[in-house]
Image 1 (cartoon, helix red, strand yellow):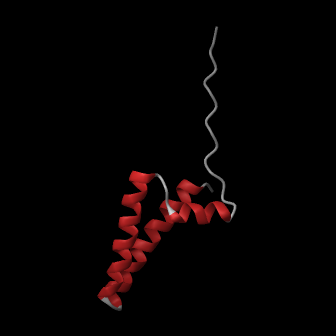
Image 2: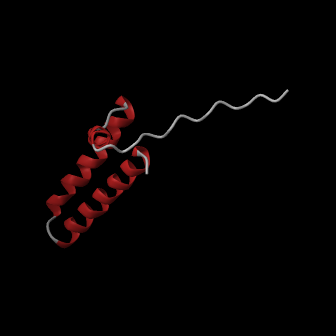
Image 3: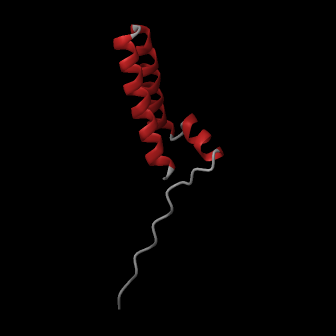
Length: 73
């Protein structure tokens, strides 16, 4: 699995988990939802995300570059 896909899975899991915790335990868990959303927003502008750095250090590969299309004669 590649970083981009794993990153979306982690963000979605954290969001759903924090919403469930806010509903069943304490509404203050919504701050985690806000943190995940703000982190996704800033990574859209800066192209940097702390979780990507963590996943790279863990050895998760990036998406390989797509090969150039072959020209047919």
